[in-house]
Image (tube, rainbow, N blue to C red; front, side, top):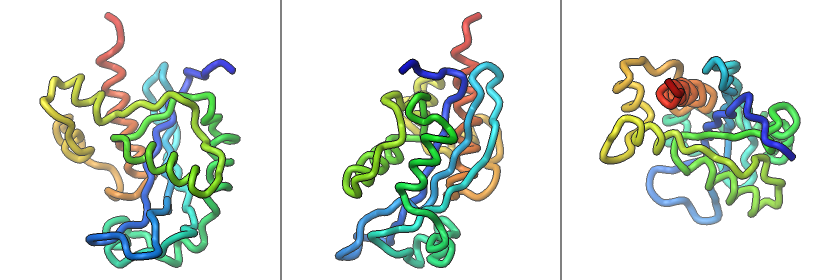
Amino acid sequence: MAKKLDHILVVDIEATCWEGATPGGQSNDIIEIGICPLEVATRERLERRSILVRPERSTISPFCTQLTTLTQEQVDAGISLKQACTILEKEYAATQRIWASYGDYDRKQFERQCREQNVHYPFGTTHLNVKTLFALMRGLPHEIGMASALEMMERKLEGTHHRGHDDAWNIAGILADVLIQLKPR
């Protein structure tokens, strides 16, 4: 099956988290998948979408709510990881498109959780690490966080930091800038 190169799916996840060590009997669960398709030809961000995912192996800690603004009640009303992955495959053709995230955490969390819960991995084989690409394009000696990258670009963070749909939107803006710099002259 040929890759579709029309859009890059920019994804940012939020997962259950705790201040300090993970409590016994709990595992990090994806609780939000933020999606922002980036049209390659125009570098336009097409959508800002949030899919809330019901955690099956953990609960929302006060620290997690403080960081993400997501509450247990909100994610309890979410859908299963399997249903969320089906949306990625059917509505976004995720298995056929390149996808991107800021760093490798999102890719590794998806791979691990899909494997552990026996859920079909919704993405194809090509993943772009925008954090690394940005550092390389700017000639930085090391990778920097998303908020710092936006600052360096003299852009304001749009929305709420650590909400998947807002972070995906901001990451897509960073990636659009990287793609413009890559464009042949």
